[in-house]
Length: 459
Image (cartoon, rainbow, N blue to C red):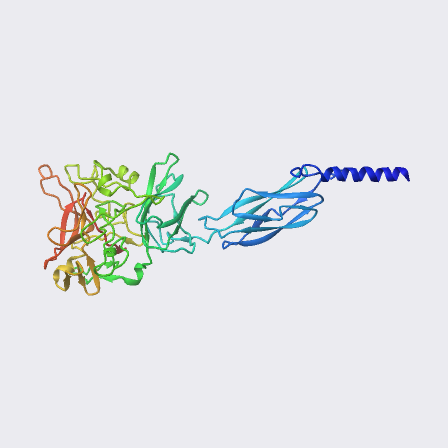
């Protein structure tokens, strides 16, 4: 009897000492090893909420996580029990995951908590391109596209990361990231429309390729404009607005769209007001960037243009081209195929003259187009063509008035050079010119360094 009583007192003493010890130290059962078991994975909903984890243990345990978006209750227990895991709504582009660690004595176990994002909307479902349309959206929709190749080509980008080159509003793109597993860029947008250029960068941070993200509710297929058939039977099916335009309302500055140098895939901001004011552009942190003229550079090449999509290359070669060597087929004007330099979305391209050389805008010079001085542009039936101004080839500066509102829209067909290239080496791009007067000039030609608007046609 005394021996049994002594054993009981020894056991009580051990329990007393165990309970009075350091609370940060997890005790171990005195006569065996603690065993602990938890599920390997727990999935929570994207919109947030809670779920329970079952804990099987024959001793005291604690639960911990480093994720600040998770809350665990309770964090300690004894024996079998449950932990309620609560998460906020997930705004991460590719979802998120974290580990919840359990420890009981020397035993350890963990559960991977996964919270997915919305299923990505593939904006390249119709094909790869240098421009993608994304809707303004604060609901968390993830827009995704392949970042592993250059435009519609098979050439690899060697992408290691992603960055915003410029955006027209500080928070136009709400979140953007690159997923190396899938090779996709994922983007969530803010609540407003606008334009941005984003780039794939290599391991050293150098830009490998870039894309124009056109944030708009516009659906090009819903408002096609088909030209009258010309004498050769040629018909062009146009968008109802310029590339990068935020609307198609007569008189709206948002209808002007973006500006391109002939043959380049990357845009520059268009006019910010009727007098040609330079609009602001912002980096990925929402900080203002230098203006286009402030960053204009000399001596471009195709390689430099791909690596520096934000730089306007001023006229510096005797050809008046922004690049050397020159290439008449940058927008498919020779091969009549859509090239990797085309700035239009999948299924669309820069308009070309037909095989007989007729301009896609020739019908506008044959009567029927109506000039509107108050709206600074012209109508053809319900088709609106705004005066967009240009970016001057010598500086990259915007010009919107040369004795009246004016603008031009590029054609992908190269302009005819002088028959004597030695004496007159200047190379041109074709464009349609409109100006604040009773005259509508048809196909014209200008230096390829000049910046003008683009209106895409269906392929």
